[in-house]
Amino acid sequence: MNKKSELSQTLRIDLLHHLQAQQTGDSSNRASPEPTNIPARFESCEKETATVSDSTFQRLLQGTYDAAIISNLNGEIVDVNVRAEEFFGFMKSEITGCSVLHIIAGSDAGLLSTVCHNLEGERFTLIQAYCVRQDGSYFPAEIAVSRIDLSEPCLCFFVRDITLRKRAEEMLRTEHNAIQNSGNGIAIASTEGVIEFVNPAAEAMWRRGGNDGLLGALLQELFVDEDGVRAIFEELQSSNGATWSGEMKARRSDDSLFDIQLAAAQNRNSEGETISYVLSFIDISDRLRARDAERDAERKRVMLESLGAACHHVGQPATILMGNLELLNNRLETSDDVTRSLIATSLEAMEEIRKILQRLNDVSEYRTSDYLREMNKPTSIDSKIIQI
Image (cartoon, rainbow, N blue to C red; front, side, top):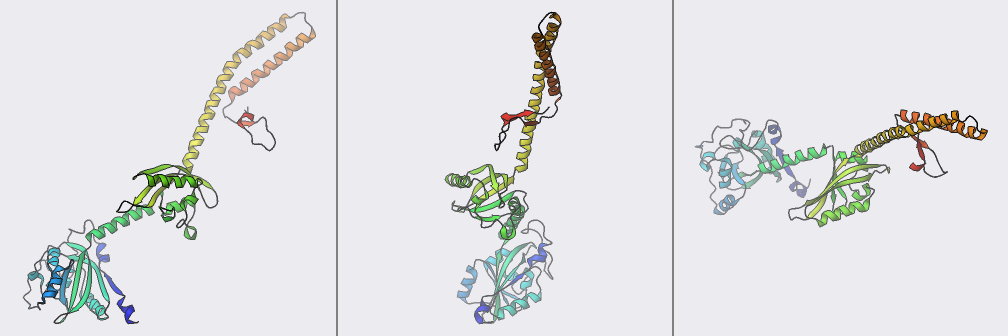
């Protein structure tokens, strides 16, 4: 391996993993898991230690943003900056001469050996661990370790409190898991309409995943009304923080169609500029089918009720007509054959009307059949009659 490739490498040591399994609640104010030989309080060590006196180095050390801790190669602390005193809650005199392992939870001599061995190859070392304060509480930290040569070789630990970062990462992880496991389809599209993120629920709606996934596809192509989708984006762009919600007809790659409830909103950066669109999809095909079926059932119920009422109203005058025709036939003692034939056929017709009204009154299911049908033309509602 050449010199350049060695310098480009960073050794990352993660001591957070096994401690996080024990952690619950707020990591900033809970007691630390007991590391080996952690003193209850950092007391002054009487051992004589080296003192760094170079004024330029001291100005640099005290002006560093991170908590800086200088130790010898055995891990004995020889100097700290003011920031370290604030971070850990101890005075310089209380910690000088103690081991740096006392403030890194879960560490041991093997950690120092690994760090020193790595720094000998002039590579970078980055440690993620919990650091222990004087009061026993702990906080997640990122520790950058480097080697400096003063009067003797030393290790410089730059400690940065990453409590806020860890909280943000945990919140992002929680939100990501919520999105990934959501039953609603969620997607993020660029201002040009290119899909940049999509969750499994959205891929399931369009039946696309793997190499045929939705990433990189144009959002407009997923809908029947492509111009309508562009109009939604234009409406969102022209409004100030408004959202859009409505029903649209979506199209799969096999040209099958389904209905969705679409909600769209702008995603803005810190400067208020629209950088993408966040979209949420709900498949409402089953709901619409149920709604149409309910409407159809209601229409048929009304038709049956109307039919029953019509039979009742028509039946009364039909009965009167039939009775009058029978009376008329009985009273015509002398009449020509033509008159009697007309009366007889009228009675037969009235009897048929009575039977039809009876059958219509007994209908319990609304069904129709074609009455007039022209070749190669769809059957209209005007050419259908009720089945009896």
